[in-house]
Image (cartoon, rainbow, N blue to C red; front, side, top):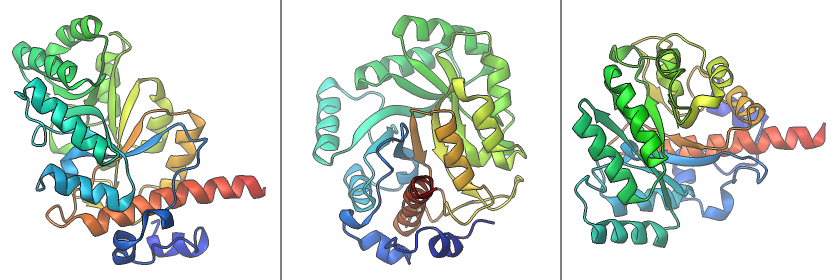
Length: 286
């Protein structure tokens, strides 16, 4: 298991994240940013803030120096007016945050698909993270052509039968428009018993978004935990992101302590940035 303590000791001992409290309180200048030559961007999945208002969520993002958000409807309702959407984006801009996608959105009917695509267009994003019924995929194929949007199907591990892992999505969409792909929840892929690092490489061309998380076990009983404390090898995952030249967002979806998540989010963000910096520093020294 990759423990936070061993990582900090051996790889980024100088990183000012020796405790979640320090991480949460540290000035932005003390938090490492991913190396500039990395194509991928660190974000946060909106569901992490399900118990918080938008201003509270943005304040947490400011504290951990993260600037990309996947938008959930509890922060920007589906029936928002043009004025409300403009105000929302202005609020994000003032916080130095970009809303890069919407979702996950569950879609069980063609009307819900129509509504979802219309919502994404009005919000002004080009990526929908969705959970559609499988029989509706031909209709989604039509909509991505009409709207010129990417559609990333979110996976949920062994908890539900619909879209449990990466291969279930890829097998269903491989003959559809290439703009239909995968929101790769690496934790749920692992909980299903698959190898998220191998799947990241295997399905790279169809991965449009990543939910960054670690888990305690490769089974249904596995729980989300701080990024450096689980069973997924995060340094190896980062190395694979670079190998495949992934250029989308890696959005932390933190589902532990969801009513008081800041310490865990800060630890996870610091760990991820530390992994990125340490691995690049190692390359420069070798």
